[in-house]
Figure 1: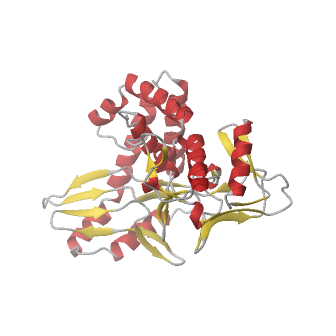
Figure 2: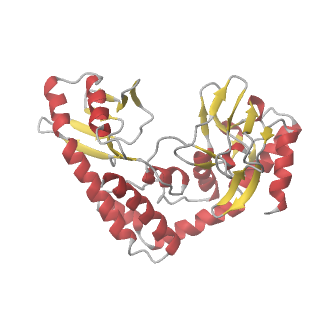
Figure 3: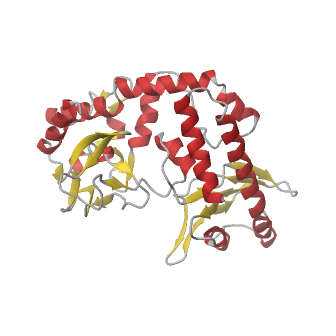
Length: 336
């Protein structure tokens, strides 16, 4: 492994980050976090002052803004972290991927077929600054008290859906637990395969599938706008989570639609019922219309996934072809 990561690890300890039974390693998919002794628990904890506010980053220079009021030591550490996480190597890798995306005319294909399920992943950025902003979006965390922050060292921990999430405390945030595997994992949240590819640029096993974004028009002229934001919804203890459904003057906005979950055949129906039970401003007729829409939403998503999968088969570049086909196949597997 590049010695620079060992230097970064030492700098992380010096700046106040707690690292117990963890170290950085280079694996098949890049930098990861492992436990030297799997018989002992691990802990990573970032004090609040180490969390890097997203508003303090100059994405053109990839450095902390000159106007940020921080100590020289912390500024130097944050800049070190930014060079590792979204420096020239990461930018060049994304640029190469975007050249392939453009060559394959994938954005034109999506527009012609009204498919937006991988819009973020397939987006083309005009410059390095824009690419860094996209890379940063994948690393940023919405802290309930501090706001949008970057997590030095902690964001090198890879995703596993079955792992626990980040623990947010008054004086900082981190992860801890028993070392069931050599590598330490954290859950980035309940996302499906195409969402993982859109947000983070990778594909991993998942147990769920959300409907593709869509717009429907009712016979009464009402527009139904279906989004894909499962963080917006209603949670009922011991029952499940349903979408936020709200009616405005011009449309009915639905935050998400859960199509399926592995080993939970009733999850989709329960989620939809929770959303409808807590819907705001809808008439009984409109609710009934949404009940009848379930099969149409599922079929439309299936068709879009299948079309995307078939288009991916034609991509010449192996890396891009594999990523898209894995994401669509993983999604179809959940549906089937």
